[in-house]
Length: 377
Image (cartoon, rainbow, N blue to C red; front, side):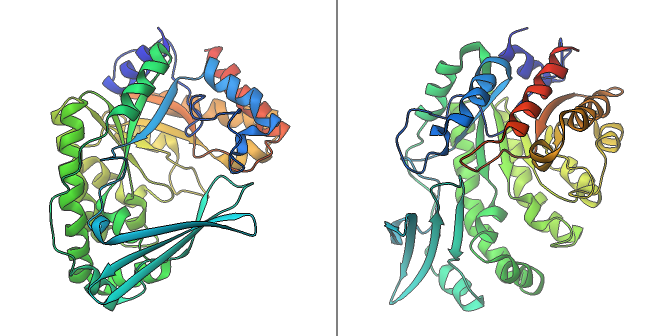
């Protein structure tokens, strides 16, 4: 089987020659070693062997956003201005939402040696800010879908992999507007108000999902955000209210057009696995083992393997700190637990990827070990 065939057969629950192996965010297409941007960590020579390994040996899954006119759906887009500037070597973006005579602000920072964006100031700080944001008139997102990112990536990949359309759910859009402490308090104590915020995002995200999945049927989708309502942050009853209620319509639309919906949720899963299955999703990642999560991969396979393709469950911290022998044991255990018994399928995959400019030799060797073990099956 070629790599694209292997991934698609796994999603359909069909037999494969071996389990696919993915390096998650690393795909060998988006890591440009020649891009001189000072914020591009992949120009460091330490990354080149891993990028080549990813390109040549992994079952590549390239993430692309469901964008409209180049941006994600946003109810405040017409009221928003942004300023980006350099200060002390870091890149800052200040976003301002103008609502009547009032302004809401957020600020992010990106450092040149770390491939992530830190939120230093969140847009919403309290209940009054939510009420102000809710004054923005509700409207359907009417931008033009931008399919080029998906189609160009698919052409470049050929038979070496697939594109996965990547979308937040309403909970992700709403919860990420607060710092974590404020979010959890408001979600617990102001369910009616928080629900109105979710409705505002749900209207445009469901519309965007419908337009994208209808035009690009048969693709894998990743829906991220459910972990915001997973224990210990919120109880399972609120997971059903804030995730299942809003994600199931998205998933129904994706499946109606022949796609495959994958739920992304870090951390504790045991108390919400039934609810995840009730959304209709056909895949789940990253199924983190204890102590990061609270359930073993073998348990999820035994209980839910008929419904879910499982992506996981190697911890990025293990890739970075374990010896090759110790890491090899983790890889073999993941494959054994992920493939044991009947089920839809399994994809060997870490929970994230390194994000520092320098990739350690230990991490490189452990990535190589993943490929060696999977190819020996």
